Length: 475
Image (cartoon, rainbow, N blue to C red; front, side, top):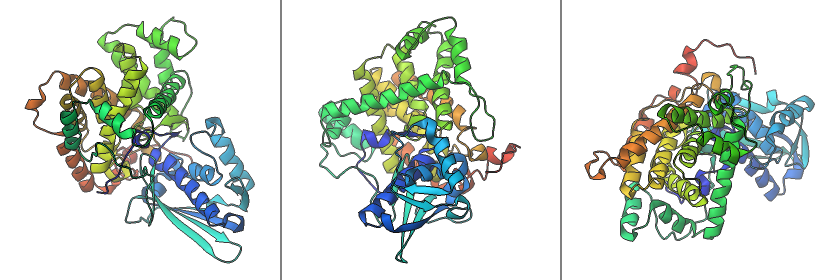
């Protein structure tokens, strides 16, 4: 496996749903291609563009919004700042007019049927999520570049480098959980403190803290929106949004006007076991219903699994009296390190490893973060991550209709509940008695990914995707 230096802001990225690998990644790839044309001085010479989608991007691209992401990326829009309520109107306008303004500068005639091709039966060897951009110039030449969306919004250009941080001398280089534990034992630092020291090799601690709180801001806004938005999810499955009705039922007659007042109202509903379970499910549903509706979410570490970490973090803030900036930063830094260990040693791409690589990894990240914030030792933190992943091993990715809805949304609720359970088990266990290490489960997850049939890797060719008789509209 390729090793890389991964920052907390590589694992947690603000973007637009419904998929980090099929939406955010292709969007970023399109932006990179436009920038490449500009760097070559070729943008003004473009008279035609074609986009070729391979493998999983082709098979589930329409349901995942790959086509929409590419049109917006080529148009020069950015997923961090683009207004989510303009996603559908702008792409509809491009389709209606048949004109695409590349990089907001060069207009070309564009026919989606002829110029955006879904090559369902073709794959490229490096990764299942591949896209080739072709620009044909007025001087008779052409520029062609291929990009791979390798999960979590990470993009690698064929023959080039991925979107990783500049190589620096990290005070605590980490490839495995054992490396991480070594540094914790040697220094006495918590996992989050080790991560902060490494992040300081790229930027000041103040900048890292500010960035982490900005990530949390996007998460809490997503939860709040999702808990107050009704209707049906787009895509043709007619899946009703449930978070808002669940929120209303749980909150009762309590009155609030903003997020902070809502948190107080949620806390006031009580801490019975059933009530907490309902709220954790509500938090996770809210995020992933937003994700499925082209809302703004945070990869955690992917969009398809974006609800697990916000739901567990929200549980900690509301029901464990953890609502302080320091605790929020601690939670996110710890979670990010566990996510980076899985990315380095296995994968966070469902197209490579099935849903164990998304919900499983996010559950492990959340379990670790919660355990440290609740006072667990470094070894208990890693034990919690191991427990959470161990009970996601082998989970397939089989989205019905190629949409990030069924079973994806409910899986986030289950991943969050498993994370809390894993944390509680670890906190009540002497890690000296553990039989399975986190590194062993990372290795096992990767072996399972390699053995898994490709039809269970985000292709909608197997599992629930072929056993639920649904009629979707023609795209």
